[in-house]
Length: 474
Image 1 (cartoon, rainbow, N blue to C red):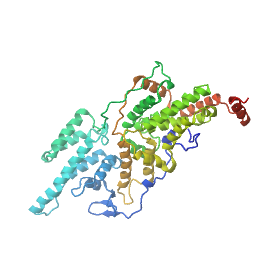
Image 2 (image 1 turned 45 degrees about the horizontal axis):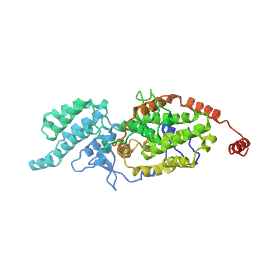
Image 3 (image 1 turned 45 degrees about the vertical axis):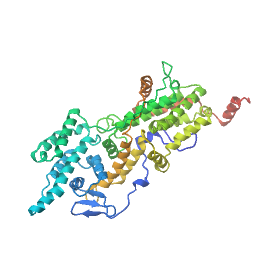
Image 4 (image 1 turned 30 degrees about the vertical axis):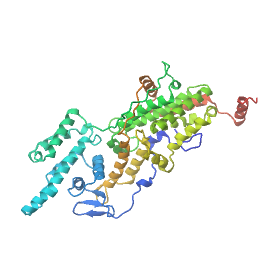
């Protein structure tokens, strides 16, 4: 597929998600500053804002559990990205070692008592809180990571840890997660009653039998459910392994990740849109289908479902559809204005600046366009080394990535207050299942051939004669 539209507005193509075009983001530019390696902590810090730029894994863990400073943003970034610079087992070992911190030699009795109350007790409390955070935030531990629970439990039951009062609540949490087999994500659900669905009257559904608003609602529920499943490590791994690494079965990791399913669904919607138009032999029926799909895209826009909106617009903007001049001539200016509003929403100019600004003011729930997040993560990955010049972990890179992931997670915390209509959902899934992601070239060739059959190429004089005839002058 390609960019472009009849209205002349620059358009994002959903297939660009599979080959992300890297753009320079002003927000992600790295300012050149002098970095200071603090010999006491082993951290590389920014002298202006005192933020951590890097450090050894051990130094980063010590900062995570420091007795004299708290930084929620640092803690969140660390736990969200630690798998990109260490392993879960190594992190566990370092936290256990940190819990059993030893006092400096030569302390007098009073000094030892002060060190214990002012440093050791606080460090131990923060180690336990770190373990709690790993268990209460669904996006830190995957199901494959739950083996660590046995080690955590053994640690908590050890004599020195059991003496710490906070360990009892940690033990209860470990046992609860062991019993359920998963950590829990907090999702905000709307309190009010869902709007009544607009049920179709026909028993055997066709696209135009379904009210645009209800079709938009059902597509929103479908895409929202897929978006909810995306995990932070999938975002990081995708950026590290390269574009498209997990988009097909058999890729790295042995299968598709949740991001790949989102991409696949978007591309299938785009293909469904193209075929729905091209399957009509009569230009008036094609125009009616185009107008119906424009209304669905516009309803998706008002529902803050930008993922489906861009998939529909992308399908309508494919060359086999765009070239259907007779079809587009029958589409009213009102519909074209709605189409243009959808295109402008995701204008790719200036690194999607208009879309980013709009998204910042959107009230959840929302299904955002995943391609913008993936582009930014890829830019961070390609523009920053994993290690700083002195061989320590580049934590600033992880901090930037965690900010993007936090944006992704923001929209996962709210669900749509809509009802599933089984008949429409089954119709959508049946339609989408007809498109094979591994055969996109053949689909494009088939769509192009269908387009030429529907409206063969015509010379300019032939076009003028046709327009005069259609207008009643001939």
